[in-house]
Length: 315
Image (cartoon, rainbow, N blue to C red):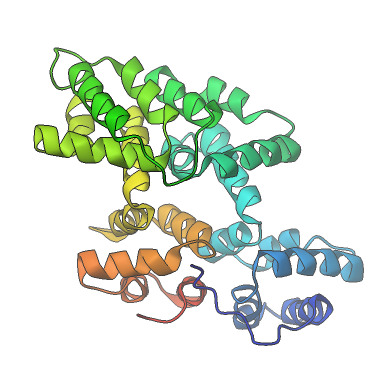
């Protein structure tokens, strides 16, 4: 469920474009006006606004925003201006080829549904003129590469149906491939984690917990490491409860000394039109503090104002 608060009667794209143009004119940018418009428009409205701005002022709105804003606010706003699939494509391209910080690419691929991933692959190629698979091939390695490519390419059912007998059998297979033996058969983990629906993986995890006294997450942490472990953990935790998974990611971004703003921006911006309402509920349940209050204490200025606008009401 989205947390973005839209106006009851949204202004026309033309009116929004004129308001933004006024905010950019003169000495300095009226950043508050920019936030008040952009943080309260959905993906379709933002797309129409960009088209209207270009036709009225012969200028790309993203380039103008980049020149008017700076720092963390600029990063958050520019990411927000894309539609969900386009945004995922931008995050992946940046993660795989620019920063080489593969945590972001792993999170995006391993937390999306099969339908989202197929559309994402099309958008990625349209935007960058290269196949996503090729960028993964070139910029990842080992078992991490194998799980990303398998998860991206293996057709999976998206419904809630499960096969209990198969789930119990796969739980045993994973135990034998991991905790029961010396060393780990990573190929089995790749095959099972990439080949089943979220509901089936959740069922496998439940059987594993019942049979062996702890969830798959513990086995993954014991038997694997690095980006490969992160991919497997993301897949199984999102199969169980994606909102709880992202609540943990946000907590990690804000815990300790300093804030991981890249991670904070990525999760809030990418989930605000999908399930941020549920993430907020999980965050409050697990950490006894509202996500709004946590973000408020870790950020400041216009950057804080923008993120809080995307988070919606404090609850």
